[in-house]
Length: 193
Image (cartoon, rainbow, N blue to C red; front, side, top):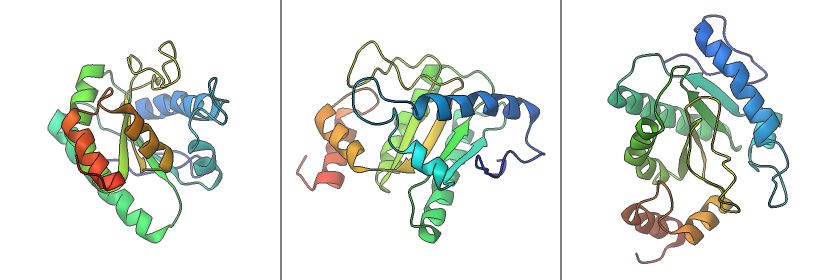
């Protein structure tokens, strides 16, 4: 996998040119959309991103082209491990966005997410998946799709209180299967499933 970078450090020169082009579009999504005013509640679309950009704890990297699902899962597990080590050294909220610059189907991305989300949540982290064709709508409106990104990507970040609230309220929504939700409730809320 390539190195990690932030908005302040910039993309390393040795990063694939296709990834550099994709990154420029992803930055617009992150800074102009995720940091924009949420249309249905107070605050930004993503309440976490603006602060992560300000304190320079939002990291980026990309998947090399032509990977199998198993290879992608291996990279994501390594990213989670990297993030856990980073968290021990930095007591701040952060995130890592790992993106594809090649086309991947939404179904392909979700299948990886389903296999890894519970594993990541057990570490107190969130594995998010975003895609240009994401059918996941907002909790506030069935006509607004905030997880539609310019390129397929995963993100690893801290689980925050609003995640727990959404998970508690949502039950078996989108990517969270009933079994995973029951396990997550035990982990987050100390309730019997």
